[in-house]
Image (cartoon, rainbow, N blue to C red; front, side, top):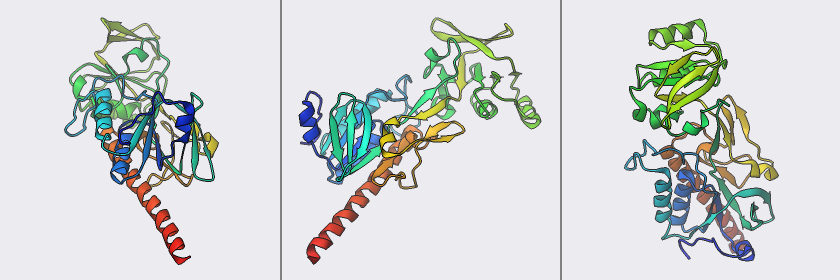
Length: 325
């Protein structure tokens, strides 16, 4: 039954549904993978918790033919593309995964379960921001992290860079491409080298070392940064490097844990998307924090082709064994 959704079915009905691939995460990577697998005549179940990382943003940018599309609208369009195929969509949160003789069993928050021989994880990341009063409410609006995603929208504004690690200097120099009015607030997060101070000075970027005390707003828009020394600095937009954490705690039952990097934690995978656990693939931000929305869609498509090839190889081996017998 192409395009089915499982919402409203009983737990027993859910448990009885067998599918070839379970995709956990219904963003660009997951829906793109579902599209490729559906078109490969595979039965697919997409499980989506409905909390995309980019939900606070007004639009997703840099996506050819969809530049500026609202994130939830992009999801709606992606789901609509799946309707002709054997792809089911289940809303809910995955809380556990375990191996079975046939593959994997996925446990949901509502105690329902799903099983499939292969799974693809496309759950993305969670952004952890510095604990600064007044900061969090601007995330995805006038507090951004990627100039390629949102730099155009804040071009030529007074942009404050909030230090949150060793990336602060690079971030300030990077946003200088979009505005000549950049201020770097180190926020006790790092100390630039002599060469970095020279680079900042050459680009006309003032640097303040005192920690940030709070962010002030006017009519819902960021207006100034207050430091612990009492000084106020007017800004129109902010940027900060968040600490990004893979949404993949449910994989612990498979022995698959996120790996630490200088910016957070992600799931390791090879060039095909295959993780250290045979039968489990990962795509998009959950395995590569640098992936944009467009790149995540391609990443999901690539993983889908690898999953289909893996299934074809297993089916061929079974057919040869049966033919020989």
